[in-house]
Image 1 (cartoon, helix red, strand yellow):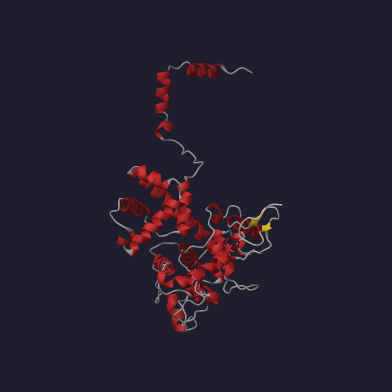
Image 2 (image 1 turned 45 degrees about the horizontal axis):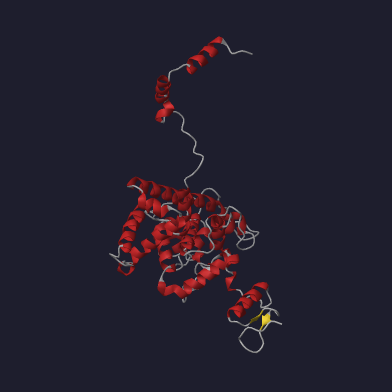
Length: 381
């Protein structure tokens, strides 16, 4: 069927337009000025993904632009030997370590920052911050629902029931969440304390740590390290975020192909990642509707920073090392096998022994064994 005359004429007219006129029409079109419907973005900048992992495992409360600009300046001064790391204050050294961790997390970022403009630095910082924010928001949303299942005793129900998507009835308004959030220095069974917490007359600050941080939710006042950061609730939340929600109820360390840990090559628990999960669980149990670093009810930023400071305190190295080993066994058991002994009859052990004998001149090539008598190579038959 032939095209109608009007359509044919229009097509010929368009084909016969002079290049200049065609260019003029293109420039005058709304799309040329960015008007009209927005174009769908098909690919997210990888920096956003790096920012997600940075916030979960390195620092979630961070002014990224300041971290980058100070990191660039500090690195230049160190390279020119104008200063040494010994000249840095503990706070400056901590920030420098964070900056270095960011560079390691994002391949090519160091060169991009060193050769880019101030606008490039702002863009990088914005993308990293976007990743931090979206990851925190995603985790907050998913944990809000999941935590209800975890705090419900097996084959029982909570009374009154806790709604999965509404937080108004949580916090100190419910006996279960209130007990878990109650600071270890307070007695939840004291009616006056419970009333004061529920009414808001008593608002615990971030340095008064909650009961849920401890194994079996029991605090040993004679040894504050006993069971600290080893509760089953924390382990479930950590697996939920880092090795997939399905791994919470399956064998330790089991992760899906797309797990956050596997995507970024994460094989061990970090101090900030543990603090991040503790902060997220604290918020999930609370009645606060919106996660905010300045929220005075949960005091999230103060709490998070205190946990990180403790776990990075050199004077607590022995206890922290033991804690991290425990956590890695819970979450990444397949990556802690380096400490296992190897059978002497195993192939790998035999190969290592062969190499040792060859290097020491004790290997008998014909017999495939150690030469008899001396350390000199045996004469071949």
